[in-house]
Image (cartoon, rainbow, N blue to C red; front, side, top):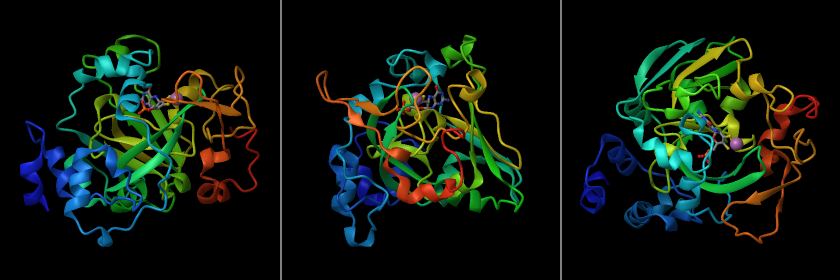
Length: 313
Ligand SMILES: Nc1nc2c(c(=O)[nH]1)N[C@H]1C(S)=C(S)[C@@H](COP(=O)(O)O)O[C@H]1N2
Ligand SMILES: [Mo]
C-alpha cells in the first residue's frame, strides 16, 4: 500500500507523519465521507474495502467543508478570535513531537508520537462537535481510540482519571504570551470516559495530517462533551486517582464543570444550550435542536446512571 501511494502524494515534502497517514490503513466508513479528500479517495480506490469495517461511531451527516473546520477555531494559545488560530498557528513546530505518559501506569515514558501512532489502529471518525458557545460542526477526524494507547502503557487498577496537558511554548504560541488563560491548558476525563470507544486521539483530518489550528499534531476528541474538553496539541498524559484540574472549570466554575456533557436542558448561565448554530449553514439557516450527549447517548449515557446531570455539569 505504501509503495502504491507514494507517487500519488501531492505534498512536496513527505514528512514522516504524512508517510504514516498514507502508509497505514485508514479505516473508512462504508458510507465513506472519503469524498472530501484527495488522499482518502486514493486510499478508498486502492484498498479492498471489504477488509475495512465501517466505524459504527461515524455519523452519516454531511461533514463541514475543510474551510469551515480550519478557519473557525477555538485555540486560545493563538488568540481569542475565531480567525486567530488559522492566521497564527503555523508558528507551532509539530515535529518532532513527544508525549510524556505517566502517573499510574506500568510503562511510563516519553514516547515519540510517530512511535505511538505506529502501534495504533487508525480510523476515520466522523463526529459532531458541539461547542459550549452553542455552535456546531461535523468533522471527519482520523485517529485512534484513547483506550488503545492507555492499554499500551498498562493502566494500574487504582487509576481513576486521566489528565491531559497542552504544550507550553510562549515563543511559538502568541496567546501564551498573554495572561488570558492560566497556561498550559489542562483537561481531564474519568477513567471510564477515557476508555469509552468514542473517545479518540486525533492525528488527522480529511485524510491528511491535522492542521495546526485544529490541535496538531495530536488532540483529544470527546464528541458527547462540549468542545473545550477536546484539548489540543497534547504533550502530557497522566493517570491519577484524583480528579484533575481543568482550565475552564477553574476560571469559571459556575459556568464550566468537569463533566461538560452536552445537555440541552441545562443552560449556560449566560445563554440557552437548547439549540445550536451549525457552522457553514449560512446566515438564515434555522438553528438545530441540541441533543442530549450531543446525540451519543446510546454509547455513553450508562456511565452517568444515578448522577444528577444538572449538578454534575
Ligand atoms: N489547548 C487548547 N485546546 C482547546 C481549546 C483551546 O483554546 N486550547 N479550545 C477548545 C474549544 S472551546 C473547542 S470548541 C475546540 C475547538 O476545536 P476545533 O478548533 O478543532 O474545532 O477545541 C478545544 N480545545
Ligand atoms: Mo468550545
